[in-house]
Amino acid sequence: MELTRADTGPALEYSPFDSERFGIRVERMTVPAGGAAVGIATLIHASSADLIILRVASGETALPTELQMLGEVVIHADTLVYHGASLLDAPGKLAANVRPAELQDLSCIRDIAAQGFREYRAHYAANPLLPKDDVLAGYVEWAQSRVSTDSTGSCTWLVSEQGRPVGFATCDISNDTVEVVLNAVHPDFERRGHYSTLLGHLMGYYAGNGLQRLIISTQVWNYAVQRQWGRAGLRLMSAQDTFHIDRRLASSRSAR
Image 1 (tube, rainbow, N blue to C red):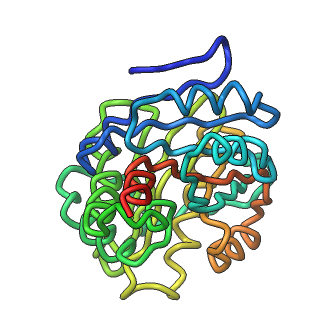
Image 2 (image 1 turned 180 degrees about the vertical axis):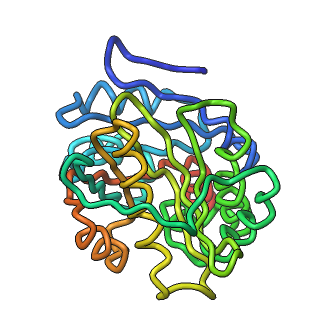
């Protein structure tokens, strides 16, 4: 993993997934609350990346402001909200129509992801230089990434209707916490209770396997799913703003 770090602060991390997908050099950084804006901005400004995807705690405006003062074009791409629940208290329920995904399920997962994320407005959608087809292909690839993994810390789950997989959730485990990394229900099967069934199964399963907490995130505008999380016992934990610093935008602006 390629890192560029200033002192002991947050690091710029090369993103091979995004770089290969979009054919440019992409780096990422997540900045904890209270990070030193001037030093971090200087590090970012010195980077040769075409695109930097930056996440900062919501309400922390000093860093994006400092970057703009250095001449960077900064796009506020989205706000990501994190919700969580204690698995010791939240009511989970195992479901007979939910099971771990297997390699033969890859085509179903591809179809669900391709349909479920076709018009989804995540941070990539805010950048006019990222082709929509490439963004969607990235979600499809991401959706499949936990199926063939040999790691016991990752898993993909499927919810089915009459034996047909109609939704999925990819999960990562770290210590006593499970994070739902990506999830979707096929649009043709929405509003039939499949999402709540899948979420309830995850909570019941991981609670039964000794984990203590479940966390999940989405864009702040995604109100419907957050209402479902509230009914399932999840509560808002934190929020992060996503910014894109795309040097190609600066070049196109100066060329006018």
